[in-house]
Amino acid sequence: MTDKSDTIEARIVKKLHAAFSPTKLEVINESHLHAGHQEAFDGSGETHFRVRLVSEKFDGMTRLARHRAVNDTLAGELADGVHALAVEPRAPGEASRR
Image 1 (cartoon, rainbow, N blue to C red):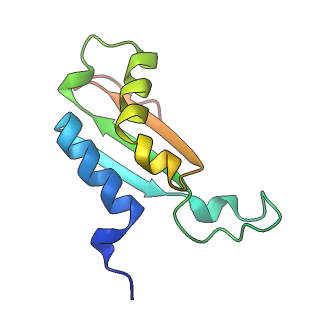
Image 2 (image 1 turned 30 degrees about the vertical axis):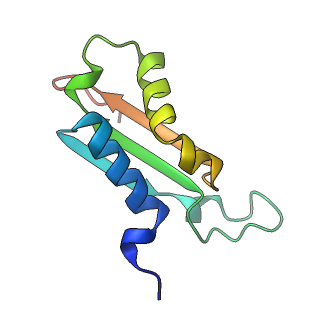
């Protein structure tokens, strides 16, 4: 049995908390939604994630700079099997896009 603290998802949560001190953080494993997109991919595992993140550190940053900051923080995970990362970064008080 895999220890939940050793998962890619747990590493993502830990790194984002450390880097951004978020007031809101959702890390959603969407791997199952992508089953069949590649011949050998059955949708299991930890390959596709959506991150919804609200942090004061994003205040005054462009959308592109926010995405780069998150991608830089998670560079290890992106190099270690995360195939897709959808990022929804906001500063406190900004409207959600969903």
